Length: 98
Image (cartoon, rainbow, N blue to C red; front, side, top):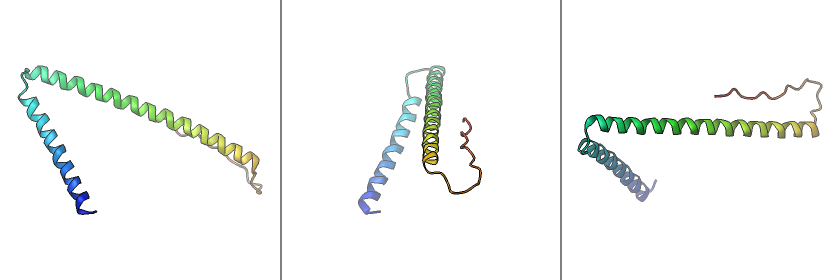
């Protein structure tokens, strides 16, 4: 790594650390009661969990669709280019759902 790259990485780490500390201080000195702050944090955590679940389902669906597409292409290729052996071909199996 060059010195400029190292310096940029160091600056980015310092910025992120400062942002995290600033957010923590802002929560501690916010003009809200502790119960309200905890409720807000709980709501935000639940929203993040829901988004992560949706993303996981989306990735799973996309991966399954791609698997089907690739399997079809392989089957097409095999039908046009049969192997010169007498061994029995085994079909591709779909991966288990996550």
